[in-house]
Length: 231
Ligand SMILES: Nc1nc2c(ncn2[C@@H]2O[C@H](COP(=O)(O)OP(=O)(O)OP(=O)(O)O)[C@@H](O)[C@H]2O)c(=O)[nH]1
Image (cartoon, rainbow, N blue to C red):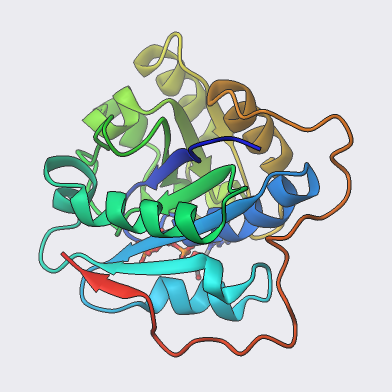
């Protein structure tokens, strides 16, 4: 549909739910007629890419792994060239590609994406890491186009005060949106899709209910670590 795919970054601290968000977005965006591919960044493995490939949610060949080495944010901020090359490979391989989701390796609250790499980016934190995170106002939380506060199902178990998190997010991000999710049970994901589509201005085909070619081919073998590139 688009000439160049729109690039959506997904960053945030280790274990906050970035890969789970990718796994949630892929089928929902595809159901809206969006032709989609995924790039994952991991330190020294292609673990997240293999997980997304194995999920059965997307043609495994549409998932490229970038191994970033020591520092995850180098590959998404200082020198995103390897990720940009991966986007180019996907765009050449799939001429109708609309969107590439680029998942960062798990990092800290200061992680941000270069505007050379992404058109729109999402920062994912989770309630289990502490309800004071929004009050601490890390740069990723402040600057992301969309903040997702995940694992709201765990809030009662860890004593996290969701109302406090909501009000602290509103102070930290008076204009930019914040959404609360339980990705384990797919709570709040539709709102995230809506926000990404409108915020990143992703064009939607009028008749977009039918799955498109980014759907998995169940007969396709899962490539064993192919397409892994290293920064
Ligand atoms: N209870 C609960 N668990 C969740 C939720 N979202 C993700 N998880 C779990 O949290 C763990 C980490 O999720 P991931 O999606 O792997 O997190 P990540 O941010 O990609 O992690 P790294 O890639 O290691 O930085 C997994 O065991 C998920 O199943 C949620 O909303 N609720």
